[in-house]
Image (cartoon, rainbow, N blue to C red; front, top):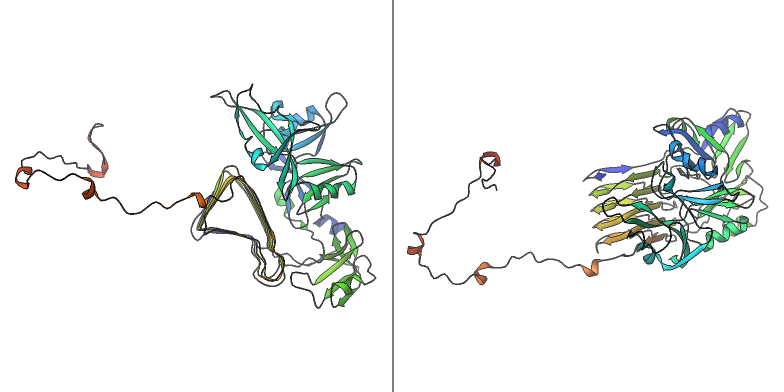
Length: 496
């Protein structure tokens, strides 16, 4: 995929803040609540796709979080669109015990494509550099670990450990070697909600990772929080899904009987009273009830001015209309040659940009941005996954003005950044955001040098001519002549 000079990919949301329905049943049928699993019967070629409504957008989820048997697991590729690295729990592997299986290579219907993940960690690595070095080709008798080995990386980011699965099940037809890879583990288990929170605090997780409690409840990780997987909403195709409204926390719905409701991460609450106070301390002193609204007149920079009360989560920022939209790109390689991909916003929240490239992402005087130009909106979230990420005189930004800077996550085996390129999630007046880079090489500019443009003088290198001009005229000459349109008369003719 290539975006050339002057070309721009933009996503801007015109989402409303208030919706009206005939009754609550019509409201629930026309909206997607946070945590709803979306199953689309026919995404492509009659195959199912699974997605999760995270509140601000719908993102891809595992094709099936759990199946009853190995036979059902092997049937998944015939029914669902799969991605490499998908992890599915099999309740009964044949001996009455459960196990996790990781899809080693994409959309294969072969049983060998699924690798059984070890029950416990049996190998440890110091950091992501060592994990990246496992991505290589090995003779079958020289594998560093058995396929399916669960590996703990001690320091993935911010000194948090992470789990990877080593797989080696793809044989190269020319050499007979096996392709070894360290793939991020997407599935986890916890005893209860407290254990779930400890998992997020102590482990490096990615958006879309899932966790299962001992009670059977399942959660998905997104934007630093766990989302409870609620009911399954089924749609025949993507066009039907687009007819629904994605509910964000703080959105208001009214019904024909005059009732008003406000949405939260835990469902709809009747809209309560609306109060105005000076600051956060005054807000926290209020005797709040579910659905109450409050407006701050002296909110510090980077803080929302409107909040609603969720009895299960406390005071929460209220959704503001006009937030930028979402751009999701999946491609082999992406080249931005003076092009732009943006979900910028003037004053509300920046959007979401997620780019998954199997090979390279290359920016030459290009820009990827989910920044906010003014007011208190927060910067957006950027996630880039590729083998190689190269920036030359380019920018990747999620900046803000009064709000908090956004989140930039760059996951690449090799990051090449020129000195005049910028990766920035700062805020002018609010709190700076975070930039997470997982790459063995972050900056190679100090190992580069500029080749001299001046050619060597042949006068200094050629020996002195000992033949006079009078003698030179008797020498033979060799001339070349290009045929019309560059076509030679015979295959042996000289061609320019």
